[in-house]
Picture 1 (cartoon, rainbow, N blue to C red):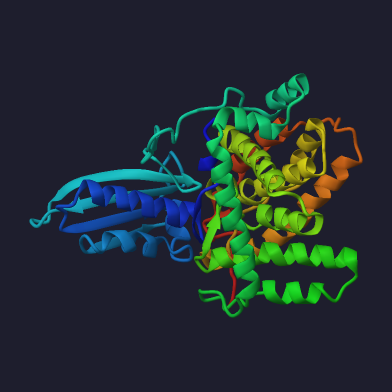
Picture 2 (cartoon, helix red, strand yellow; picture 1 turned 135 degrees about the vertical axis):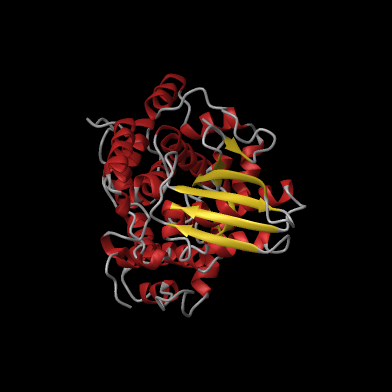
Length: 404
């Protein structure tokens, strides 16, 4: 299992798999072929089906066009076997003949694979650093040693992880605050109005309990709206689900005055939960549906909240299990291929559910029948059973037959 640095990636929205990944692939290909006179990029499957809404073409053109004229071809009905998010990059000389070509896959979180291994990595990036890769193993380690999940992260990541998580937390908070301050219409044909600022203001008029929930909604909306407009966010675990963890942690820091060190430890625990899912299943909406994005984000946030409130290893595991279990089967059906409807609203709702999962687990001793690892396996199986039209292709569910 690799570093949580590869789960928490700082970048610009609206999609880690549709913008960050393809842009990275295009940049690597251009660097390898500077003599190119023309590029042809073919997008396949889910990457093609919702690419325009996710700004995939703009991301690719931004790095290839300065080198040579670029043509993008769209094949949404063609799925390559390794992963639904596939693209082929072709380089051509002045005689019109192909110089080189490469097929790669954007597998989620901004990562690129050639179908056998992750590519474009440097240093320790991409290396396995965790000896235990299931929640059950790590929980048993915690109970045996008396240590916490975040300590497991610290032991295997090294001291530098805390500086990295400090940067992550700063970017998350900045996204919340920008999103609360920004108003207007989000880019794209839906004409969707930003809502974070109005939710934040309206929440002030309610009594404490409702005010608290309204503010959590506002914080999640703020980050998700920043993502939808191409702002800087942190994948947690993806761009489309980037509002859940920041909303929960921002709310808890603000309302409970937790120290920054405790917030970073909560982030480490959240990262470990997301990493376990990424290792044993998937965080890609194109591969397993929105359960792999929003569901995993909810599990991460629930575990982080449980830790902040002093949950035992078993209670933290239970909170994460509920966060994911109760999103099983969630389809990925973005209207117009945009990370807006239903994505933004789902972030707000999942943030509230994460807090509920923490509260529920805190009333128990942490003992329950269905383990987090079992739910991860079921999520993977469920995702593979979902028809492709419910996995980010923009052809089924809420995305089907929309009129705007």
